[in-house]
Image (cartoon, rainbow, N blue to C red):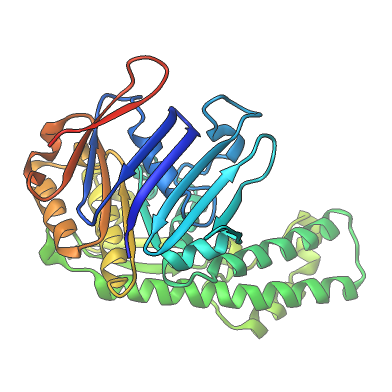
Length: 358
């Protein structure tokens, strides 16, 4: 099952775009601002959520807020459409029938790496938690539902805390919902880390990371529903003082270290941090070898030396996963010649244009 056709209308810099695709990797090159990343972002919208940039649908329209856009795709035998009508929420349809966003996760596992993620190991835990949850979602499509359920119950509990409500009956019902969804979240995260750890391979030229779910004071590594409910109840006085929930899976963090010295990722060089990220992305795809996987690697080649660039292209070829890469010039993909389709992207005026280079 592959993405065999993609068409865009009024999405970002593309008034129109139609691409017929096959299983070969695709390399898009062109100057900064030409619209390469916009293609990858559109593909990322074929998965649940806000895509690789995390932008609200209104900000993705070519004509600006208040306009709309449309993405159509053929994935295997399925026709998929996602749209953002003017001033409306994003909609999804599969084979002509309305569908929830979560249905997209069952079609194809979409995995991405962007330049913004280069700061993953040094930024706040929230970014690493999002990264972990994207990985987890690729293994467990129901992870999004558990996350939504947990967040909804926590928002209601936080409202009670801010309003200084003390009736335990209100809290028990919400804490039961948080505990049920939270146990699923944590169990899914732990299982995903186990799968990634088992799929890493240092012979690929990329370092293997030792991964752990960091809990801290939030006890975010405990998948026991009863334990989560008990801690939420015990923490009510402290949470009332803070006006928010201080413990639970929403406090999780991802820890990573590597090498004989067990070097923390946050203290590693920029190059090694990038290599660790790529190692995890490749391991993620490798662990999903029995599923249709689509890799989106934005501006990744420019940050690698020639040897690691060769290793990356070899790994992409060996994986067999449908892949899309971007870079500023064709020289970055010279080693990919004969194995990938290469497209030149330009933006001579206000709209992006594309042509196949080979």
